[in-house]
Each structure stands twice: as C-alpha cells, then as structure tokens.
Image 1 (cartoon, rainbow, N blue to C red):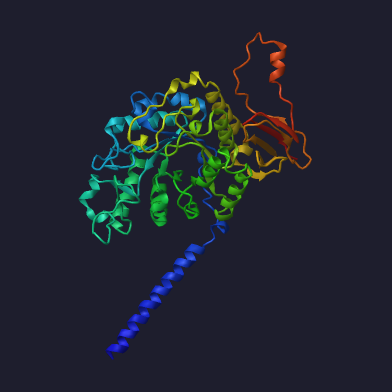
Image 2: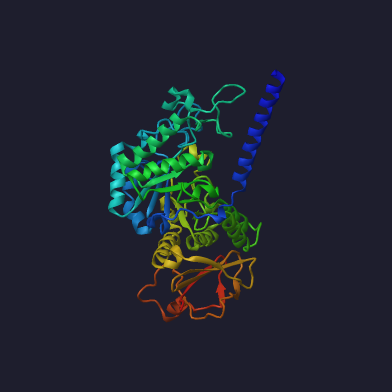
Length: 476
C-alpha cells in the first residue's frame, strides 16, 4: 500500500513538473508580434522628445535648483520630457567610487539632500509644468543599497540558496536584490510609486533594468498609478516585447543602438539599420513605441565614439526614425564628459562652454527637433524603407502620415555620396533640411547667398561626408 502511494505521489510530482514545463514553453513561444501594444499612450509621449538629466553634473550647484534655472533653455531647445536620473539618497555601505552610484538607493521615499529638499523638487516640477514640460524620475525597483531602510525587513530581499546571504544581482556588488515573490514587497514598491505621483505631481517613471522585475508587478502597479494620474508615462530600460503589451508605453531600442555603433565604426554596412529595424518589428507587438538614442549615461559620449560630423549623422537618424528620440544632457553642445562606470560614481561636470567650439551642435538639435514638431509624418508616420544606389553607405527611408510624406537620406561614411533614391517615380519634393550653419550676415555677397541654395534633389541626391538631406511632398 505504501509503495503504491509513493509511486502515485511521484507520478503526480512528475505530472505537475511537466505541466509547469509546458506552461513555460508556451510562455517562451508567445508571439508578441501578433498582439497590440498599449493603445492609450499619452500624446505628449508619442510626439515627444526625452531629455535625460544627471542633476549631479548638470549645473555648478548640482541640484534641483540648477535644473530649474535651465528650464527656459530646455524649452527653447524643444524637448518636452525631462527624465531625472535617481533623485534619492545614495547608499554608503559598499559604495563604488568617491560619491557612489545614484542607482544604489538608500530610501525610496526621500530625496538626495545634495540635490535639495522635497519642496525644491516640487518647485522644479511646478515650473516645468508651467512651461508645458513633463517630468519623469528614475526608479530602481530591482535592487537597493546595502544600507537601505528596507533592510529592516530582510524578507524583502533575495537570498543565495547556498549561503543564505542576501544576493547582489549580476556583479553589482554595491546593491542588494529585491524579492518580488514577497507580496508585502510588491505592496511597498507600488505604494512608493503612487506616493511620488500623488505628492509631487510627477508625470511618470523611467524604470531601471525593468525586465529584471516581474512583468505582472509592473502591470499591477500601472493600474494603481492610473487611478492617480490617468496619462502617466512608463519607460522601460529594457528591450523585452512583453513589457509593451500592458505595462509600459515605450522602451529602449537597444539593438538599434548597437547597430549604430557597428555601422559608424565600420563593422557593418548602413543597410544593417534596416535589418535591425525589421528584426525588431518581427518580434514586437503592433504599434510598439521605441526610444531612439545615440547617447546615454551608460555609454561613452557619442561625440567621443563617433567624432563630430558622424555624431550629428547619428542624431539625424534618431530624430527622424519612428519612435521617441532621447538626448542626454550636454549632447546639445557636444560635451565629452563621461558619466558611465566609473565616472557614474564621481562628479565629472558637463562643460557647457563647449558651445563656443561647436556652435553648430545647439543649432542642429534645436532645428531638427523643430522640424520633427512641425511634421506629423516624423512624429507619428509609418516607416517605409527605400532602396538607394549604395546601401553600404547610405540610409534612405520615408515617413508617411495622411497626405504628408517625408524622405530622409543620410550618408554614414566619410566620403561624399552621389547617388539615387528609389521614390517610385515621385519627384515633387521640397528640401526641408534644417540649415545648421551660422545665419548669413545682412551684407552677405550674392555668391555667399547662392552657396546656401539647395537644389531639390530626388531621385538624384548629393551628400557631404556624414551629410543628410530631408525632403517633403504632399501625397494625393
């Protein structure tokens, strides 16, 4: 009898294990490309431009007041979504570097005293809203510093099953991993997110390593956040398609960023951009919104990686491709100060006087963002890749919305491009490429004025090394 019972128990255990394996396999095989992404993405996100701010290095004062003082300049630049990197107190136990990582948070309910007070943050948000700018903050939901106030509840943390010690995710020795199998931890983190929206009138969150946290936590937290602010925005630092079905509005287009590095360093042809875009589209839910970037706080500065002309070519792609473009503070003047590991743990200030050496940079970003704002096709149009006569060097695509079509041509090489673009016989294009050169003086000569006149082009087009042209036509 006992033997039969034992065999039955073993059989049931194997059956349960098989069911779990099948369920896991089905989850892995789920085809998100046949599903739809969130449909109610706020218009200010879909048509927006994100500007990432590291308050520690953004101004001489390195605080909230230093950000507030530059809101008018940021408004003039054209960005509309200000993302503040973590604004919480920094952990000191096991910290890295002299100051420590902003992603090793000591208290999720407090503000970093080096940045100011809670009232200083509220003033920043109020002043931003007065200028029609939105503010989102970084949330590090996967882990905390080792001296976080949550350590008073050890059950909030993941433990190594072999040693029983609290676990550090990956090789991040300055942080401890949170345990989302604990319902009390989930409630703590959800209540914390709601607190920041309710008390500070924030517009959303950029969620650090979002894929490391269970998707269903984000989905449930969003339900609670929308009760406080229905048009909340959620940005995932991830490229996991399932996150855009219900939890997040947009995420990081990491594969495109990797391709950007490969193309500009000569490891891949320019046609790799299209291949990467199509591979992403094949696995993402329909209508998925991606954040496009060439620079961020984790990477070497774009101008250091690519050089000045190529940096603007990279940004021209990010600002005209579908999705939401992002600028990292200092890009608009060609700043080269690092902020990735190990600079993330120190204070390497943005050198704003670079504007004197690179005056074309602020003109480029301001005028390209203005072009994006004034053309619906660039903000919300579909992307149609076009063939050209040398796809190893040039990228060509159209953005189309309603009766408007915009064609973008970018030369990703150090040699001039003289070629053609396949435009299905259409020729009635107007060149709308922003002129980022210094304005002509009133007494400019006829020759100087003639040199500024662009021929319409298309299907034939000529580009300088790392040059770009943008054309528009009405579609009947």
